[in-house]
Length: 555
Image (cartoon, rainbow, N blue to C red):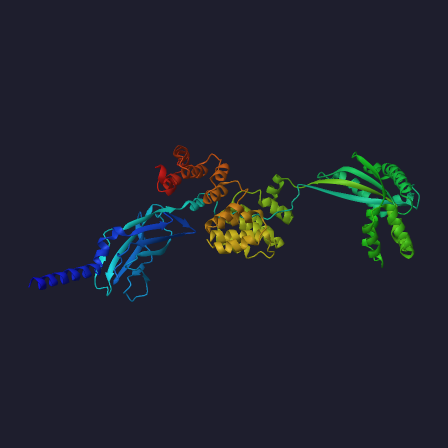
């Protein structure tokens, strides 16, 4: 009898043991035995996403063979919570298709989470909520309490919104010149080996035109003859030493002729610079290039092969037929003196342009209109001037600059409409299209457009795109030398704190905030707090700092 009772008691104990080993409730009760970790331990928002990987490690003889565990990651923040993808884990005897943990050996299982940024997650925790089920899911047991595995969320890259993150639009260059320098020229020719100026040469149409020009310019208030150049040459045939002397003598007789005839009528007080230039090889080359001589390529090859004057002449004389042609058509035109009047024309002043844009804009050419647009104040006024240039001259530069003006005012749709009218798609166009895409938050398109532009602004815009896309190392490279907030921020994001501090030296709230972050990251609480005092003069930064996880360790 006693033997039977003992056997019954043993069977009951075995049954209870089996029941306890197969009861999912025990997993919930012993939840503390499960280890957890998260990478990263401090969540970070990158390109609008908060991503992390968490790992659960189960001890030996913990995970019941017929149990199912569902783990729900939840990002809890001020104002709400976001549930992530459920991770389902099963014991060895469950027939579902989930990750399996061995009862005898235990094991580790990892899950990934990805949350979209919402306002408020700057102050948050990532916790795991778990429920264990029996094999048929007819019974469930929740783990006693959520388990915090990470703090959140570092949103430092979003500080770019405190600065210019709408892109840098480019104004197309204008070629307006406030002072225009130009020349008026005439020349006289000499007979071979002669240096006297023949009277008939001073009666040529060229000389008459120069005389008339110099007389008329005296009455032009905007134009001034600043100097006159007399340059005399010899043709590059014969001995070089003799030709140099010949050119000097021609320069002297040309000066005398200029004073007695051309300048006597003009009565100019401008200085006269006299030069004997020797053999005129440059003029020779230019005339040959512009001629229709059959063998001109051969002559030009000789000029390119030899630099010494005597060698050039010898090689050309050796081509007797060619030289005879040169002696008739080219060389006589090189025995000359040039009279050159150097003129300075003073264009319309800024004040005159501003007056004309209101009263007489029809007299302004494309360059003047493009320049005047940079003088007027206000978006509407600038756009109006660019519109005149665009419509009157079908100016792509005007449409581009109009778009840039709209972009700087945040009028993206209007800018896009203006860019649609650009016919010449150049560096400025692609840069401004990149800014449109930035303002539309289409960072992929922005990167494509910026890559097509060599405008200085394009590299800056690419840096902005890199920050928004989480490519911080690229951003630091593209913003290098920009010297402002965004470059300093990029270096904060790659944790190059010394470089960031060397850039963020401006005495302003925004850059003080960056310096505070740099100090907080190395545990320098006193410096961080001093910089925060300056930063918090800006209300938006004060509000941000109260939730910024960058300062969690110094609060």
